[in-house]
Image (tube, rainbow, N blue to C red; front, side, top):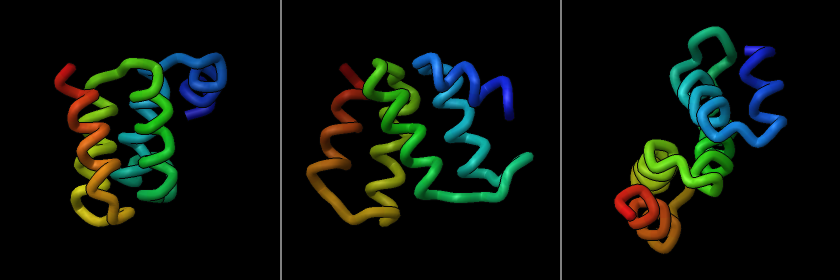
Length: 79
């Protein structure tokens, strides 16, 4: 986790995505859906399509209820 965090701090989108997955699943860290969403959004903003899809799915499933955010990140995932 520390190596992923160090890479994410250097704007590595894949590391951000992987951290999001870990926080979403609670694997090796205390599960935190909001923290996972933050990492997915950061990775999506660095053009990681998988992270954009995950962010859209989390919005759709009610982590934060926002149709516009769901639409934004799902569109970003498929562009």
